[in-house]
Image 1 (spheres, rainbow, N blue to C red):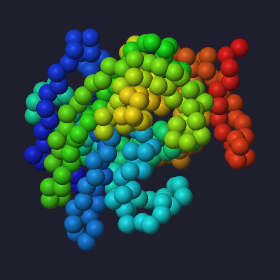
Image 2 (image 1 turned 120 degrees about the vertical axis):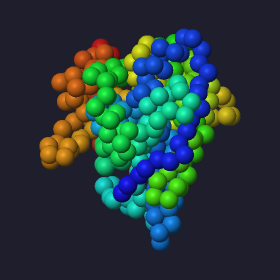
Image 3 (image 1 turned 180 degrees about the vertical axis):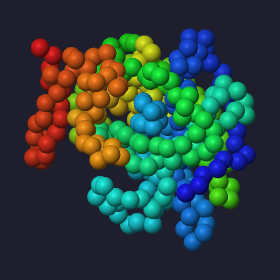
Image 4 (image 1 turned 180 degrees about the horizontal axis):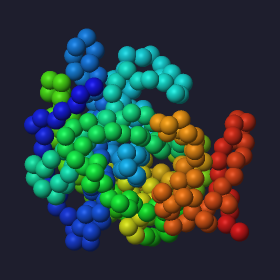
Length: 302
């Protein structure tokens, strides 16, 4: 599938001074998510949320963002994982996020893996546009360091994403209008094994304020480290929630060479660096949930 951008633009951000350094570091790694489909020759698109590159050709976004793109498919029910979608998932990346009318790189999503018991999904992407082909060789040598456990209550975090972006069909290509935005939020209560048995039944922490639509899946930064992804917001009580990263540690995935590994092995080898991995690793255990299914949880610190 060829995706070529046309009439692409974005508007500049107005940033508080204390957010500039965070944006300069994180913005080049942040992407927007969208889907395309061509039923009966008609080009259809659906704009999703946001995400972040964590290593060359690997990104993270929220699972509910990827599931929302299934609205493009003509299926009455969602098949069991793994399955092949009827749409193409893609990413867009602002190469000059602080410049009006900057270039946009397009990436095609090849594969995805779901982290069980969370709202996290790992994406494998390849360059789709000329700008992305150039950008892939300019990815930073060191990506964001991680923090697996939640920040302390009362700390401040930054969420970065693409609220109110639009992706419109333009022949075989797409026209993208996107504005990268930053929110500064105060950390509230943490739920390292999930808040409830309903919508927030996965590890997360609370922040003050509401994520605007389009922030879902975007990186949340604390002290320069990636500490989670924006996952849900509520206008009812002015609180939002951030999905913690530690459930990825036990997720199994296979690369293009057919080798199976776990995300924890990437942390062991420091392909991805997490400041608290050594402390978190011995606390992770597998248990049976109320339905008899295997679940992963973090035990109390010794």
